[in-house]
Each structure stands twice: as structure tokens, then as C-alpha cells.
Length: 269
Image (cartoon, rainbow, N blue to C red; front, side, top):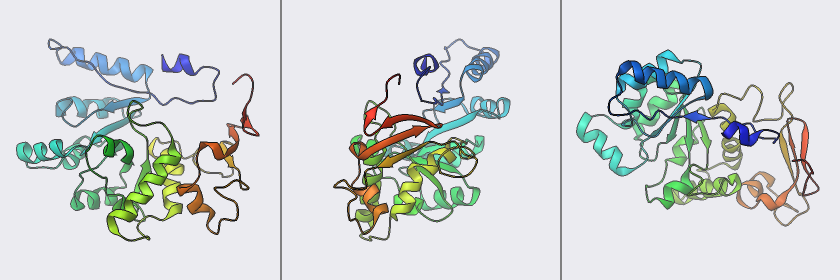
């Protein structure tokens, strides 16, 4: 359905599916359903490490290594505490057992968790606006900004947060600085990278998207440098992160195709 809806639009959907096992499904029936999802989707979106038994999660990874596997981890304090109480392990440690490509949220990741993820180059996406709305806490943004961390920003569930990466960047940067009382805790360039190149890395698309480089697709935004947000700014990078919004977009090009020109959505889009 997502692919049909996006036909003819300058949108590339990355679809992650999820099994809906019935109580009577045996191992073979579960394997068939996982295979059916892999046939039509780009991968699997797992809501938590407790959504399925460990054997099923290992099977998804082993049987379909070419499919993206994302899992929500350490999102709420309740789930983090439950994992420690029942298993003596953090959710991050348990998730590593089936080696997901992407870990989402990490709101309650421990310093030890983060050290392990940094060492293995684990791809991470944080969604601070939704974490705040649901009162789940704050992701360790200042730690994720450590050089070498493969982190990115996302907007999570559209029912909770609008898909506005400008707002997500602004929120993430202000939170990191406020939590640490250190203006150096969130470098504007690294935050912008997390919202652009970081997202491409998270989805395994950085070889063709996420930055302007020779050989990559021509997909980019042009912002109004004479508008209130950027005019005479001594630090344009900081202004993009903390002041700009969708209203500052003058042009948009996706895969070499002009989508917005002079703030007007082009006909046929």
C-alpha cells in the first residue's frame, strides 16, 4: 500500500514490516510469514526486544541477512527496569544477541551500553520530541555526539510528532546543551549531519544519499539566505539547526528532479 501511494511522487519509501503471529502458529507458519514480509518489504521493524522470542528474532536475521532489521530499544523506563529485573541484562545487551542493523530510541541506554555500541559501530536513531511527549525520558544526546558514533535523528511515530526534521534538530541541540549546561555538548554541524547523512547511514543508503558528493543522487534543499533565519548570520550552521524551518525552503531537488522552485510546489508532483 505504501509503495502504491508513493507511485509518481518524488518519495522513496523504505518499508519495514512486522509479523502478526497467531496463537496457533507453529515454527513453520512463523517462518512463512517472515519470508512473506521479506518478499515485499525492505526489512523488519521490531517494536521491542520483547515483541517476539529470541529464536524468532535470530531467524529473521539469519534467514534474511540482506533485509534491514530495526528494533526499538531502551525506550521507556518501565521496559528498561523490567529487562534488568527479569534477565539481569539491559535491553541493549539483549538486542545485540540478534545483531540488528538499527537501534531506535536508546532513551535509557547505560554508559556501558553506549561504549559497546560505539565500539561495534552500531547504527542508532533517536527521536527526542516523541520521547518527551510520552514522558519516557531523554536520550543521551551529548554522548551520542561523540566522534565515531553512528547516530541519526528521526521523528518517530507520525501520530505523536510531525515529520519535521528542522524541529527535531532544534530540540535535540537545545536538550543536549540544557542537560549538560555546556554549549559545546551539541555541535551544530554534527546535529545537522545526524539529520541528513546520519539518516542515510541508518538506512544503508549513504552510498547514494545524505550528502552532496560526486556520484551521489542530486537530492538537496536550498534555503533562503536572505530570510530572517539566515540573513547576516555569523554562524549559518547554527542558524539552520536552531532557527530555520520548512518556510525557509526555497528550492527542493530530489534525484535531480525539481520539486519546489521559488517556494512553489511544481505541477505534477
